[in-house]
Image (cartoon, rainbow, N blue to C red; front, side, top):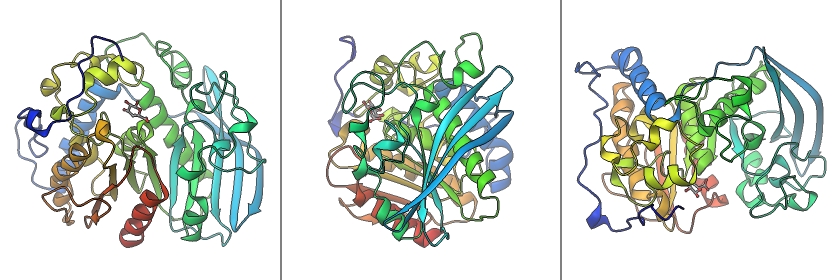
Length: 397
Ligand code: GTR
């Protein structure tokens, strides 16, 4: 963090008085009273505002998606499918490794589509899983920027595959760096390289690049399993939770979204300035957002959007927001209040969000059409989080 960044506020008394932008009034000042005016007027406006002021312009879909080198194996009641997918556009090719873990029954209630932080080989120990060919982050488990065998299974606890497949669900995952390496290179590499453009205020950041990638995971699943009617639910933890939300907000083919501790620029209300702020996030991660977002550093209240708008763009589809009590940086209360504010969009569709007014007790699960929980413990996605998400999806799907 640069020395100019103010220290985070963790005192509720010091949260500024704020008002979030009204979901139910259009930019022209007209009331939004039903699902039709939401779909035709307000949702497109919300997405445009989020594009212009926060995440940057969307990339077009690729011209072609080719699946190569398909392999499959079974272990402990889980069927693994691995493939190398090539995305082709006029000016280039972007390859990625897709890993799917499914129940061996061949029946799936729903597929969780989520990017992973450091490579498919970190989510399971199976030696069949290819190492990423792309740059991988240096901190933590790997040394240098190449993936290594010793990192196999390093993130096992984040992906409890036996639990998920045992409950009849599948997981489809890709290493986020296959779509855009997580460092600031001035918006050049990864997906950016496929669609070169002049730098501007709404140049897409890495979250938009990853969100585009998650839609390509969905494309690949749909092309491989055209006969399946099981919904595909976007999921992500932290920066990849921001990604899952932005992807599902734009791409209606996702049957729902799950945000695990996505915090600032994800589920949490920006205007609370609790924990991570625009100033802090754009100083450390200037490449995640469009350049326009950093202009609001230190004046979060004047940002024309707030994160309840991102959540509302997912309505009326299932939406779960999970926080952790020890993860003050991601502002659990701000994540809860953002979801509460987003429920006015859900009500337009006649669904009952069923959220309480107050932050629920730790480890309790609340909501009807939408879900919220705050887990005990720190910043992570754990088996306990998955237990909440599975119970919620069992109920609403
Ligand atoms: C933090 C960042 C958060 C969150 C987190 C993560 O350092 O400040 O916004 O995204 O990383 O992705 O683990």
